[in-house]
Image (cartoon, rainbow, N blue to C red; front, side, top):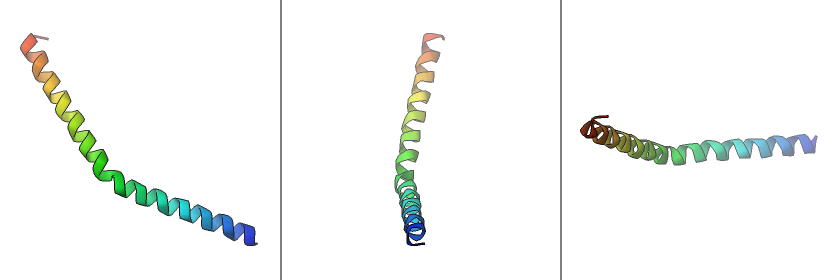
Length: 52
């Protein structure tokens, strides 16, 4: 029974860490998405000037 509890505790610890990491990096993901969207918008503008 101790092994089962140890495994459950380890899984809970990993799950909590993954939840924390997801929240901690959410802002990074939003920033990267904004940068990539901006690049895509600029690319479209250049394509329009070239007549593509």
